[in-house]
Length: 254
Ligand SMILES: NC(=O)c1ccc[n+]([C@@H]2O[C@H](COP(=O)([O-])OP(=O)(O)OC[C@H]3O[C@@H](n4cnc5c(N)ncnc54)[C@H](OP(=O)(O)O)[C@@H]3O)[C@@H](O)[C@H]2O)c1
Image 1 (cartoon, rainbow, N blue to C red):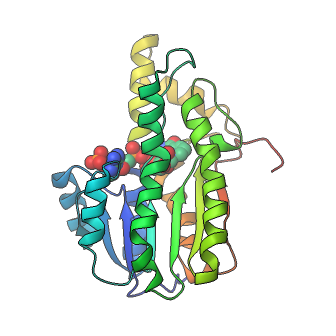
Image 2: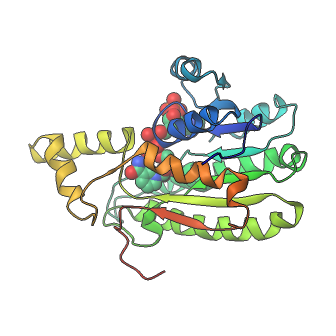
C-alpha cells in the first residue's frame, strides 16, 4: 500500500531504537523527509545516517530542551510521532512519590509538552497527523507494572480528548498500543529477571510469550506497520483511536 506521504515532513521522537526507529525507517522508505530525536547524539546520528534522516538530539522529558527543539523547527509539520515511554517493574508499596512523578513525565507529560510545542507547526500542514504510543496494559493491567498501567490507561483518555479538540483544525490524533515487543525495553527486562531467577534471558522471554495467543513477541516492525498507516492519509477516517497491536494478549471485549 502506498502511504501517500512522499515529501511530508515527519518528526519521530524516541527514534534511535525500538518501535520509534522502525517507524522512522518506514516513513523514510515511503518518501517522507524524516527528522529523528532521542538523547544519545552519537547513536542517533549513526541510525539517522542509515536511512537519510536528520538527527536532532533532545531529552523529551526536559521541558527546556523540548522548547529548544520546537524553536529549531521552522516549517510545517505533517507527521508527529512520539515513541518515548515505558514502565518500571515494581510492587505498589516499593514505589516512591519520586518514582511516580518521574514515570508521569516519561509517559504523559513529555507527550503533552511535545504536542503543545509543535501545534503551530502542525497547524501549518493541512491534514497533519499525530501518532502516539500507549500500551496494551491500558486494556489489561499487568502485575508489577502498576505505574505504567495507570499512566497508559490515562494515555487512552489523552488521545481521545486531544483528538476531539484538534480534529476541527484538521489535525488527526491516534495511538498504537503495543503488546510485548522485542526491543531494548524487553531485552533489558529479561536480562534483569533472568539474573534474579538464575535462568537464561531466553527462558524468561519464552515464559512471557506463553501468555500471548499468537505465541510470540511482536517485532518493532510489526508495530511500526500500524503506526505508519495511522501516519498516512490512508487512515483519514480513524480519529482518536488507541489500536492494540498485541498478538491477542488483551482478552477484554473493548
Ligand atoms: N516494547 C514493548 O514491549 C512495549 C510494550 C508496550 C508499550 N510500549 C511503548 O512503545 C513505545 C516505544 O517503546 P520501545 O520498546 O520501542 O522503547 P525502547 O526500545 O526503549 O526505545 C526507546 C527510544 O526512545 C529514546 N528515548 C528514551 N528516553 C528518551 C527521552 N527521555 N527523550 C528522548 N528520547 C528518549 C531511546 O534513545 P535514548 O536512550 O538515546 O534517548 C530510544 O531511541 C513506548 O511508549 C513504550 O511505552 C512498548
